[in-house]
Length: 400
Image (cartoon, rainbow, N blue to C red; front, side):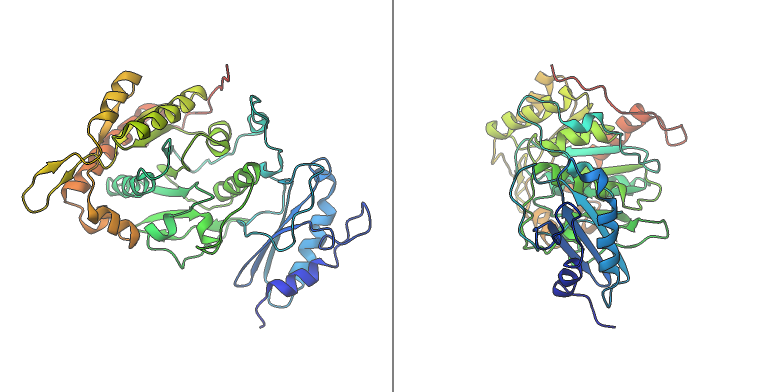
């Protein structure tokens, strides 16, 4: 069987007519992205948000056209209004995107103007009935080791006997496929209709936009489209029964953080910072953002807290020390612990061999495990023990 390629998919889509003016969707530049994985093809079509609800027939026609291409066994087409009304049409052959059911999603909302409440707050919350708790690992700025912390905390929680999933919410800079040793992995089809099974490593199911785009290909999407992609990763993944889903958040306090708080029942947030003043300043902003949207902050972690010489045991505070503990005290949140600066942690992350897996009894792993113990206890306090019914955790959000 001939494998599908972009040229044949584009040729098929050239037969799909927009009823508004009789032109093809390719001619009008409506094809926002074509994503091909073996015999599965996903297409994203940009439409005017005011027309989205009336274009189901066009979506189905595009889906049929793609499905008829030789070599295609599964075709999914989604509509998106990532482009603001009146903006020029996107160039054909845009960027890859996650699998979809062929329905319109959160990406169809125009970006909120400054000072406005994002429209996602009025939408129906995402339902994840098989996930007992969701923990977001966040930072006010990049480069503080948030993803490394997410990975090792997830493995630490799994080592406690919990069923753990890991979601890479950093749409623009996904790193979990590399850090979990899954650079060449792809999601597989689930026996649940419209779902995909995330790749697994170390007993954990991991989902990332990085499985669906080339590692060196930039994702150049506006905020609403990125959030739509994240919602698809959450909703369309067959997570199975999870005790905790660890979400590696993008740095900062943007659209994805706000939308996650409004659309997803987040159990609590963990803030990662280094001891430096500038990192702590941004960490405070991140913490206050979660407070503003009524997401409980489980505490602060001081990463790269100190360097301990492996030869003589001397401790050097490369980036200062104790700033996160002091900030936690001042802000009235728990201080969860210190993670040392060590080459083995960095190398393990780069090589897809987390320190918790390669050296489970070492000093660094003990530091992660101690933090994971506190997070597990906070989850039990927030949602009840594993045997208890799951509580509703959607916050009442105030933007005063």
